[in-house]
Length: 433
Image (cartoon, rainbow, N blue to C red; front, side, top):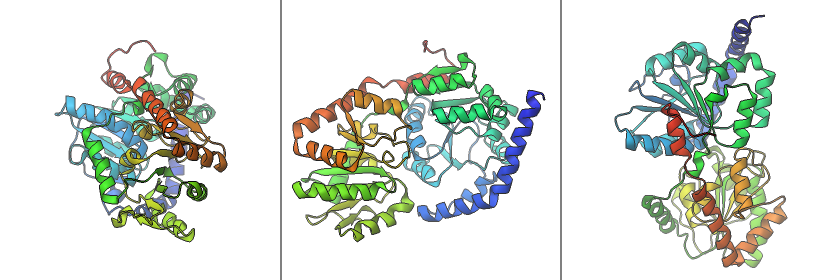
């Protein structure tokens, strides 16, 4: 059977499955929208490829959700500064990702929801936007989107590319569908050695593959960032108490953190727990959990400052975690006890905060490995280890500060991926990988 026929058959079979799943997908998106608490927008029509873009041309970025938006934002900010005339649009797959785009850039760029991956929806998106190039952040390779880009001569780049061993195995298992997609890419900028090697094993042309590094390392704290952090300190009365922050948590991590917090309060009576669930639809359930456990909770969403009687400050507002790391003494990074691959620990490291993570770290393996190697982060295997490590740092300020300084140095020593990624996106020759 000819390769092209195999690919066409596989892609249309995939498309048929998407059509059959549309009712379930629509119901799921509706539930997610309600749970997120985000105001109504034009999402429904844009998901069907029926949105009306305000501007066409320029560069189109696709970011799945909040993490990818934050990663791409560093590069987009440089582009806006260097090329203010360039039109930039961003599509997201989640409402929270779209909200973060608007928080970061306002009207400086255009935001749309990526349509469901059906040929006609993707074709209409490209026809309306007429992008010079499509830049996909990290992982999302949609068969019909890439096929329509190839048909319309839109070059596709993968920025900060991530590929786990499991993803590579899936691609090789369904080679008929994925191999033509991989072959159609203009360039791939791998964020780490694991990702580079896994892309290479998919059969991509080595000349299209670059080890650009992880743009998550290209963090800088501006005066505005520091001012915003201090504003939150004043607004929510977060000064003059030791603070343990649990950022981007998932179920069942909140229960584990609350159990650890109860142990820590025995020896550190004035300890404040800052709890930041990853998804807004879980803000209310986490608040109810804290109440059932008997804790006194102040809520950011209700503009409630913490008091001497407050045990927990629940950061149930989007977009403030980055600044809350700046007030913490010790940080636990969520998604690492729950098997979610762990969220980005560098957001704490840039503030010189020592880091604790569980063993689930497949989202950022090289970042985590570097932090561990340089003694900027401890990996915990149980709630007992988490309690012991947090207690040790909270009671020993010199040791805590030394771990935080080393975590910060990891960020400084490994930046530069934004400039290398920009060279790739401009089709300039990169130094040897």
